[in-house]
Image (cartoon, rainbow, N blue to C red):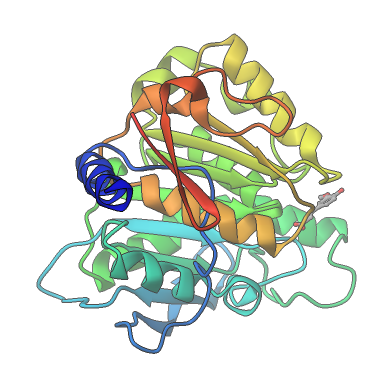
Length: 313
Ligand code: FER
């Protein structure tokens, strides 16, 4: 009897979750394990002419399982860190495995993911001193390459929606800083913005969000996450403090961890589940901040499923 009522409860809970934004505290175990029995998206290399850099540049593109040129897709631009290039996510985070698994459980909207090289200079390889000031400057130059060269190329080559509500930008570390800088600096281009463990290239909050009212109006989702033991956490923290003070809705998600792909993979899992679908701002305060249990958690009904807690409203 107990088992049956638990089953009925879980069935009820899952039907509530199916419509409401399904609140998940962290990626469940196995979220990043390759499953041979599932449909897989594909990864291709694309080449685009960059007026900004004056060369042809490379990027990777992930198209989802069941991709069809007759449909239209939103696009997530997913950016790498200071020591990486367009292959860093692929080598370190296997985002295609995470996304394939999410598609199999229908947890994300079909989207195209573009993995660019965010070091916009002629020799954009991650070699030598990656902290060299010329190379660091190239991460800022990428704003023009992205907006003037790459995005227009994607728009004319792939079946994608071209409005801001169908465009997201997220990245890890230097790519997190770029995502916050370029996303918040171009709210007419991006409505969904995520910074994972954002680096010191993140603009000061007053420059990042000079017009909180405009940000409040235009943002669909602003996601800021970091490991609690990451030496760069102050850049996420100061952005969060300012946004909180200026009442700009955002998710601030601090998880146990350091500056590594464990945190970034979880960030991708969490962020990709939320984008390109209705947003429930009332859940924002329930995301975890290590050491500070979210004040509204008590209202949720926690259901322990394996390692992950899924809550219903
Ligand atoms: C710095 C420390 C870290 C910095 C950048 C980083 C530009 C980036 C780290 C990464 O992308 O992983 O002082 O300055």
